[in-house]
Length: 431
Image (tube, rainbow, N blue to C red; front, side):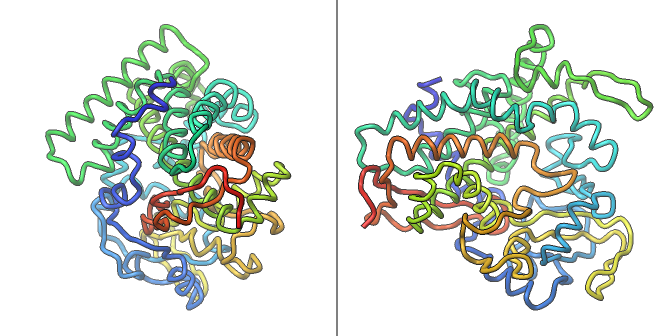
């Protein structure tokens, strides 16, 4: 794993460039749109129109192929309700997204009992006890140690590229059951066949999609014959409970769609969120010092990062019945944007919500979603970030942002946002 994890491979630069990813998938937007989202929330809690329309941003190719009335929810209370009441605010909306349909039928599009039954096949692999034991022991801690050890003797480094991007893609690849050497090969083809397909000829997209299919289906076949303690083995051998109470195994196509979804999300979201948390801690150095001196503060600092600047600040839903919110009647069949970015900064719920403060009293936010569709890999992602921050604080306790480097830029706008870089000096105390 060490060569694939630490090698000077140019694919890291192409696959983990936040600005390029945003350009490919959603249209490049620089800067933090949270103030504009907050302004919309402060005007009224519910707006007619999509969040993109309200912010005067262009529509994107991976959005939806069926026209519908569109509304946006801006406050915490309404966004929380939309997540919790998944039968009313339905994630079936993803069936109308050409980008999501590339994954086949997946838990992202399911609701109610069907979603619960399919999620239950693999959920046990992602609960907190497994994240703390199985994932840390087998895949996270070793990767973190290898990456951080590599910085010994260096004066400065861009942690976004050399740590944040590398860690999750290798952890999820190996946790799924692939070798570390396959991580970048698979990620490249997965990206080219999904979020990167906008800028490629159709024949190249098809070629990459075929390679993704080949790699996954060969692995699923091997794991059916020779199971291991990994996620694909759980998918290959776990029992799916059917609506009538009987059980069966997932088909290859069902396991395949599940794998693509987990590997795309698992290799991307944690990368950006870890960079966001690192930048926040180092931007107000008292928080870095506090976490360094009391490691029980690290997980609250990670949670606060996901509240303060979630990497995915909006989620779509399809309204299944008429509903009235704040005097606005939203009709059945409308598409609804759940604006996590403004909801997590709602002053009705948090004091000084526009300040990153890991010391604030802990209460539920929706940076990882909520309810039935709360992020499947949330606990694994947190353990990756906890391990990375602990290792950095052990090895480089006086690390600071590098004042000589270009200032990091927040890219991505409404989807998949993150920093362009996290440049640090590894051994210099804060001034």
